[in-house]
Length: 437
Image 1 (cartoon, helix red, strand yellow):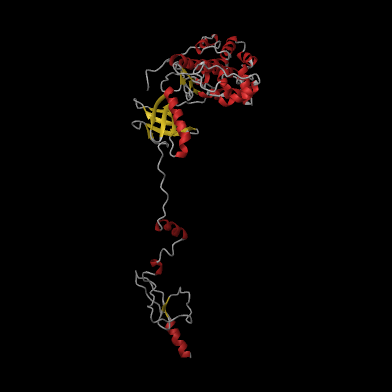
Image 2: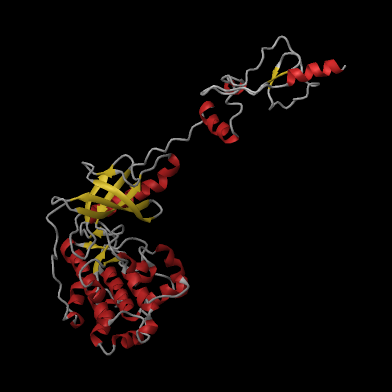
């Protein structure tokens, strides 16, 4: 037994070795059975060592071409496996959708001379965006474009076709107008996708915004809700010049003159102190006054004695063409368009009143009550007197414009001759263009 143990120990004894330079030492132990085992083996016990004559001996320092190199994907990290699955399974990110013809960055025009920019405003059937171009001198010009899409399906055909017809009507009038106080239409392009109307870009808000700002700062202006008198007069004069051009030069009635349709361009010099440039817009309800058009006599509708003014006003608010607060008594009394300019002059009087007082002369939470005030021409002249600070000229001007009798109502030419406008001087072009631009 002792000899047997000594024999085993002699085999386990490792004699000192000298390792030649440049050669790696092989730290291996030979088992009693002749198998080479590694000291890093998980089963170094001699009892648990299995003898296998069919497997070749493992050489620790040989280059490993083990199962790990043959199945690298199986031993990859979860993240690597997930990412590699996108390629292996053919799953790729969805391609970007094709741009629409009215998307930002798209080109329009006969020679693609306009590039669409950011969205400015959006409505039910159209959108207004910036549009960029280069003029003859190489200068970049920024304008606006109104885009009305055409119907793509039968479901959209009804409302979209109506929007297209309204736009075509507006363009039929708008394209003939050229005045410094009217928003200019530069070009119209029609494609299978939409109609594009290129116009001036307005840098600023509307006359409604100007009045609202004045009202909000009334406490800082001695409780004056209206505009400063000089500013109110300047804006009123600019609007009167635009209406005179429409009524007398082009023979057009606007039918929707209101604060919201008067754009104020604040990019002109001294705009903050002297006011911006007013430009009348929105000619969707406008028409040429053609004497050959067969229309009725335009007389107000007659109601029996049993019909009260209250019932009458409730019925007529459903037939307003334009905006109720700016409608004239005759405009409320008919159910058709009036081919006359008297309604525009009435609306002009409403705007002059609002510029001076910061309030609309005919306004009530109930539309029927508003209509009653209009039919009676019942407005607060005391508020105008206080706002006018003793100026009788503006009071006479408003009274002349808000006259119920059309025959006695001022024309816009007569309104411009008011002594209130004596110190107003209108420069620049005041006439029609030579034709379509």
